[in-house]
Amino acid sequence: MRCSECGANIREGSLYCDACGAEVRIVPDYSSLDEVLTAHVRGEIEGRERRNGKESRTPERRRENRTRKNPPRRKKKSSKKKKMLIILSILLAAMLVGFVVYQSSYGGYIQKGYNALEKKKYNAAVKYFNNAAETNREKADAYIGLSKVYIAQDNPSAASEVFLTQIANQPANADIYRAAAEFYMDTGQPEQIPLMLDACSEESVLRSMSDYIVETPKFSLEEGTYEELQKLELSSEGNTVYYTLDESEPTEKSGAKYGDEIGLDEGEWLIRAVAVNEKGVPSLVSEKKIIVELPISDPPIVSPSSGLYESAMDITIQVEEGFSAYYVFGQTEPNPDNWEKYTGPIAMPEGNTIFSAVLVDDSTNKISSATVRNYDLSINPEENE
Image: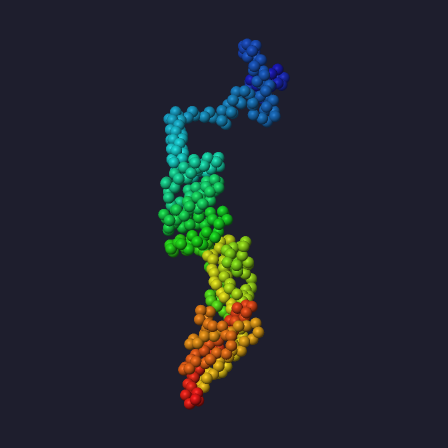
């Protein structure tokens, strides 16, 4: 016999169910077949779960547990949805306005300029970069963009003119000077940088551009004529010096790299030198003209020696083979404009006279130093009788 409440088996002769404690009904209540079957199935299930120590998992219980663990969410209020829609609308409108404003801003024009340049639409690129310059004339990006357009069109002079024009208009704008210097470096025209900065009188710009200012080379000799062989030294602190001796432009490629003193033999020398820093920026070119003219070691021998004479005398010059002698009266040193060539003894003139003579090397035209004599000839008339 089974318990009508839980469906568990009841011991024979027992008045109560051992499983649920319900009273045993000898005469069961009337119930339909469906109810009996349902109660029997439920009793079997619950009895088995109790025996296994588990909680009942009937569909009703499972629904109840799920409801307990995951209570139904409340529906969002319609006002909250409206607020979110309004916020999103405002954000979208702000983004649209920002995009429109950016398109007409300095940065927007710069971006459109480079886009047009990349597509080789040069006229459009020039227009956009000019628009950017009109928006802000002090920034250098627009001028850099314009220079790139002209470079792309193989017109470096126009690119250079962009910067020179702005430097003339804004002489205190260091950013434009720096952009111009970088342009000259990128296009292989570093020699233009010292010329540009040499014309600048703004101290603030020169301080800002100090890394582009290079000290010109110093010469150990002054310009002039020397009567001995010379050795020339060049220097520029912290920089490399390049020089030429043939009047050509000194550069890293065309000049000789200075390492040790330069020996100057006899002749005329125009030494030109430039210093280059670690970045490859050159200085202005320095130059000096140095003449090395070695005289003949010995001046000519002239007779007689200086003194007072009372009778007629002849002046003679000793001339060595390969040389010619020249002389002049009244001056301490003859020169090509007033000298006379010596061909033989010369009569000493009366009175007080200065006589000068030199030797000239016939092969090199080198001139000796002068021999100077002071004669005072006073002839006694009685001696002439």
